[in-house]
Image 1 (cartoon, rainbow, N blue to C red):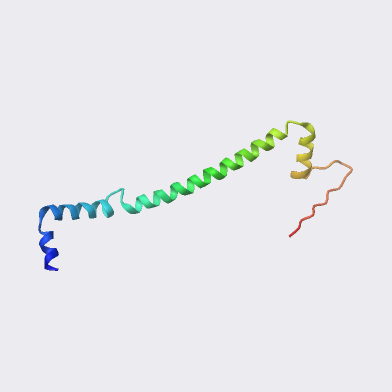
Image 2 (image 1 turned 120 degrees about the vertical axis):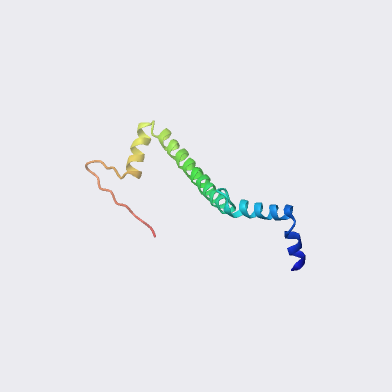
Length: 94
């Protein structure tokens, strides 16, 4: 223990220790803030990928709806539209 106290009396070691403590824990950009921001960045990148996939899926659907026949098919299957003289039965399997 006395060995360590001798080293702490050295002004350079003392300065490095104080500076390290300040930079790691007390500064505005400390280690905890950096870790939180890294986690937040990863979540935002995941969300960006999900939105990109949704965008591509929606764009593909929109491209298919140029044709009138596929527009009617989409309306009947996805939006449950029907003609006046027909009934729609939805079968759901669990």
